[in-house]
Image (cartoon, rainbow, N blue to C red; front, side, top):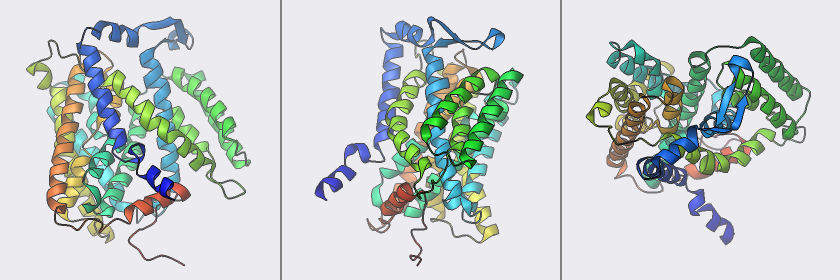
Length: 419
């Protein structure tokens, strides 16, 4: 028992750990890009690997380390997100539309208002409007990690609200990537992807629960997606949708897969992505980059748009559906500020929107600056609101989330137990 408890409180099991590792990866990225290794690091990421390419003809992609990270490793990240989304929809709170109303409304408002702010700032620069979705994203790991710094004084309902909101936000980001960042569609590859996904769904309906079959066909699906013009990461989401929730014995292949991927995503894939994408070459990047319309639009969307959109939408939904807010108005605002931590998801969409060209520096300044301000402001507001609350008053959150991980269900931890 003591060993188990010690393991449960180890550094690797803390909510803050993935965030610390992401920060370390980001700092290392800056050091590598701006030190003597800058040119070598750039070539390491961008140079074609041994003349390799994926696809045929005009649809061929030169294989470099950036493509491996952004179009292959990130597929595993989206597979993990897709598994989480399916679990929450099939057996979690999202199966009840009424219970999901507040975080769903908050997520919609938290995507729409930042996008509108970005568009308003860049309206006179049509060439930059393609980046409208960059400030609409929320980084789940970072947002929850920052909130956990405040400890047990934060009401458990606020953390569950932020978790649900960020999950729905990720779903919105996936839809946006599929609809707005897919170009030069290739018919035969789309057809191959559709047939592959159909076979996976038939396997699910036929009772196939061996995950190896889904991973094999998922790899085929990824290959088709990569050359189809639809971003390859969508293959991860589609594969997750095909994975069965339960087997005949009552076990869950989906939760098994989710648990197997969790550590790899948090401690390897996301830090590697940050290492390759978060750094900015500071030489020659002065006020012009900081005050660039793209940087201003992103940072204003994250810092202002997220709390405004989430708070107003949640208040409207609370009144419309007669649902109690998970905290006071100021606690909701502080939580909504933390949702302005876009980081990895915003950087990912920024890369899709503008690539690695001249706009990459303003994009990274906007994302990193907006995320940092959102984190500090959210921490300050929540600390002020919760400083007088007794520690442990909401300590039931931990067991509630353990139950969610074990059973694939997020229970209403404030409600009395059901028979």
